[in-house]
Every structure is written in C-alpha cells, then in structure tokens.
Image 1 (spheres, rainbow, N blue to C red):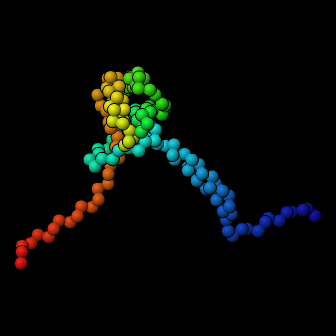
Image 2: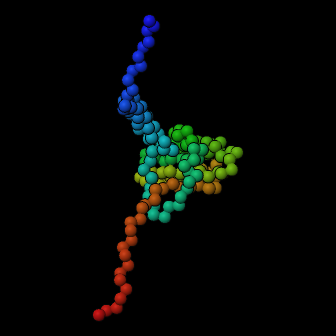
Image 3: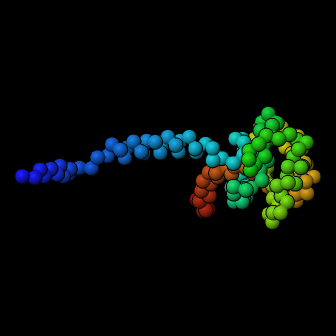
Length: 153
C-alpha cells in the first residue's frame, strides 16, 4: 500500500494577521515620510486675504528661497542653508537653461522685514524678474446676511 497524505481542511475565514502587520508598517512609513514632503525649510508663512494661487511653486524643481524667523536662508531644490552673499550665484546657476525663471520666496510671518528685502534684492541681482511671495490664504468667514430690505412701519 502506498502512503497518500491527506490535504488539510479548508479554512472558512482568511488569516488577516499578516495583512494587519503590513498595514502597521505602511502606516509607520507614511507617518515618518509625510513631514519630509514639504518643500523648503519649515516656516510659518504670513497670511493674506487676497492671495493668488501659484501652482508652479509646488513643483519639485521650483526655486524657493525660505527666510526663517531667525534670519537663516534656505534654497530649494535641495533645501540647503545658504548665506546672503551666495544667493545671487546659486540662483544664477539654477535658472540657467530654464524657460520659467520664477523664484519663490517663503518667509516666516515673524521674520524681519529687512531680511526678506535683502533676500529679494539678491535674487533680483541674479537677473530674476519674476518673484513670487508665497503666503497662506485666509479662509473668509461667511459674510453676514444683508439687512432685510423694507420700509418703516
């Protein structure tokens, strides 16, 4: 007689433990990666009511100068810290061969006005004509309804 092994019984419910392990690992990966997706140095941008949308500032190759509240300057792409003296040379290197020569400036709301002006002056010295100042748009609250039109009694 030949030995014939029996097949194990069919499971009616799926085993979800490996799937839960994979989901927890993915959750941890996304929690670690998400803060790194912000372009440039983390700054608390100024808020404005009449801000225009600048979708090109979200591109990976957008040139962004970030001014922090303590006056440090960061240049993206690459998010490297630079000094005020080297902005002109770095921006010239980045805009060569580009069709869109726009440079975006993100400044902290509590940054000194003079630091932002100096950074913009250095960008202008590099030959850039289009400078975008990035702000956060204030969400308008619902306007109060107009008073009812009617005469006096």
